[in-house]
Image (tube, rainbow, N blue to C red; front, side, top):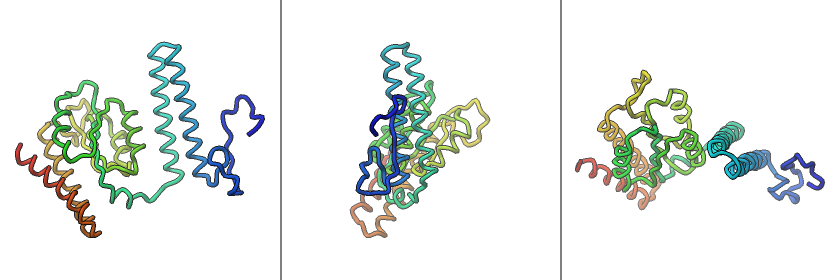
Length: 238
């Protein structure tokens, strides 16, 4: 838009004439505008965080970066509420499986490495976070392409667990560790975590194998069953 007021960062137009749609300023649908608006808002805050890191104390810059991540997460939530999608089918046929561990800063890294080594042959990726905001951001960005098994420190309260469980790509949430909260669902022993997690992942790959077998996709079905078999063999050796 020409002669845009100085304080206006961007203008978006819902365009009726499809020939004028450019997906930068003029958009064909409300959903396209919401997506672009969310990106622009996030970029503005991200730019502010970068500029702060150059001229102010690092702690202030870190706070700005945290605010940026929180804004990104909230914008994603708003978008999902405004434009709900039936993504059950997409998620059910996705073969990419990821393990995410949201730990406390004081949690033992040795146990994290044990689980990582255990699942390295069957999981597509294994990510570790000690920041809830960073973890939420990753889960929201990956909401259509992964089957996620989430391990979370037992000290996170129920509201966090409920919110994460509602994400369509999160298959299982396991609370782990000694908790200062009264928590009957937390797994306190590493061996118990190990057996529960391997059981869940084996069952997951067997379900995928059965699904693709019914779809007569023999190659993918075999791959899924082999992942389950590999994990069973690892389990029997330990």
